[in-house]
Length: 316
Image 1 (cartoon, rainbow, N blue to C red):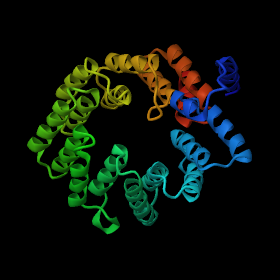
Image 2: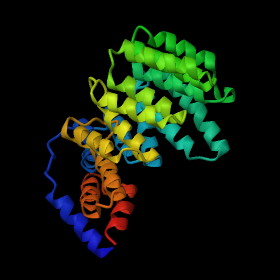
Image 3: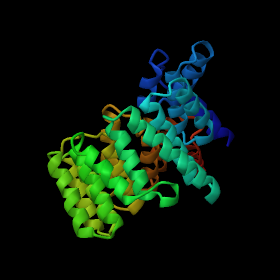
């Protein structure tokens, strides 16, 4: 353990400084430790709603739901008519609910619905707000405000904003009803609506995964690799899908390396991309390279437990 801590210290000290970058740029780059430090300093002098929202999102990247919830709540209290802040509060409530007991989860689920509905109310042109609310309505039981008809209504509202994601919601509804033929038609309609964008091919691959059609899943991801990258996180979601199903690790590593060589996004922070690459390398027995990737992840987010655990495994 002492040797691992020393190696990690060297990795942190050798990482290129980016102190001058804005917190939002740091989050997009996955430098979450620097983002948290900058935001906490900023809040001490200028406690704005934006700073609290970004701090919440930094904790969200770290899977630190308990630490992030108060910051998201503070952002909403300071700017109650900001749809984006309600969206992030709903998201972090949702992550906490997924890891809570039944009663607590039900209480949080109601809060998720309220926040997502407010996000749509205050930002009616936000595709992400409509998507998150539709998914909540589809997955949540009626007792906490879920409902298929509500999800369908969100798909209708999405249609002029983002036709591809409107078809995605309709596909999810069909899939929920075990109507796989209609679901596949809607996923393919999303591909047509987006002119073959990567996100739509990823969603079709996810459908094949959930219906145990793994060869078709892999082929859809291979096709995605050649299509316009309208959603950079699709590369990481595709790599994660391959990793979790134990399929085509070389393709998964291509996805991750391509993602890291381009502009990363907050949805898939760079430290998580390095961690996934480490896990793929570890699976293939390249422990030295895996250790380097785990150290890179920890140099950006030193409390990220999955990378800590991974480095301990490969450095034994």
